[in-house]
Image 1: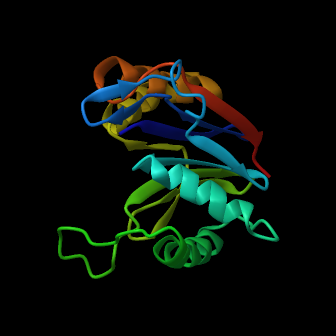
Image 2: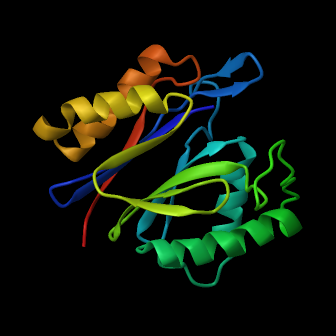
Length: 188
């Protein structure tokens, strides 16, 4: 898996991701993979996903085929987009939504963070959407990232908080690795 982070502070939003991928026990470092990026832009927003590596390809393709880029500035708007996306993932990209639990809804089998001028949002596998007030992280190193970001939040800028979260995750989680990508944008 991977680690992705998003931070909102003092009118600035930062979103970041590590660059390590794994295929079973094999690490795939960014120096060997040209298209290692886990963050992509949709209109004015940035999206960073964790889950199977194919999810980034599917989401880039899905958004690339849209005639108009959707607004990703509010939780309700994002929910409508990810419900439409889930249908497309099943029909066009052959998502197998079967999971081994008793959830009431079928899983999209990924999680992502969205950073837009409207704020920072988390999209969960069952398509619920949270808007975060300060920061959040998904992925295998998220506990380390959350702890580091909580510690440094009062004294640092958004980009530095995101970097601290990723550094802690890469230090202690064997599925998170350097280098990192971090993008910033202004909160509207």
